[in-house]
Amino acid sequence: MMKNNQTAAYAQLYKAFCEIENMPYPEWEAFIDRSEIVQLGQFDFFAMPNCLSTHSYFIIKGLVVSYREHNKEKSVHWVGSANDYVCSTDRFRIAFNEQYQIEGEIIVAVEETIAIRVTHSDMKWLEEHCAVFKRRTDVYVKQNFKLFLELDDIFIMPPKERYEKMQRAVNFGIERIPDVYLASWLCLTLGQLKKVRAFLKSYKG
Image (cartoon, rainbow, N blue to C red; front, side):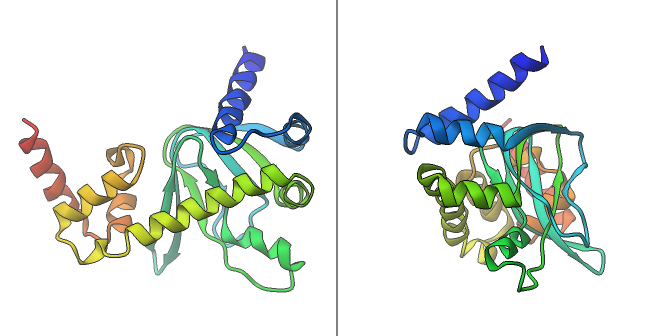
């Protein structure tokens, strides 16, 4: 059963990779050799507070949140779901031979999550030796930046419109995100978020 699950997980990711550009088998084989499947429970950490991260992740199933914390207040940067690429920005210190201090985010699974993980050093090797793999990971980064630009004006919108625009911008139901993280992502208070959800629920019937 475990072997079947692993085969299905890699097959899902390979299909997602090939939606942009077909990946040569030698590159895919190199990726498989340098990666492993992990399963995290709800509220397990991908990247721990006050620690440098060690891996990048490709999400197969589940939902993860990236945030920073200051004075016990969470500031959510992004949320990732199936087929997304997830890493803390401190991974890019590898590109600079660790000469620069890059503060990383906290990354937590908010649902039970299955992912394929790769060490930062192996990610660097793959991006240097596998051209198609490098272009595919670049697409992931550009998609995140594009979403950031699309949402540039969201925080001047009224709460309901803010919620609805965020829902249109992502490919998963944002009701899956726990209130404390979603409120932070939308820059709403918990009270405002609950009012929006109550209104939308009553509007739908």
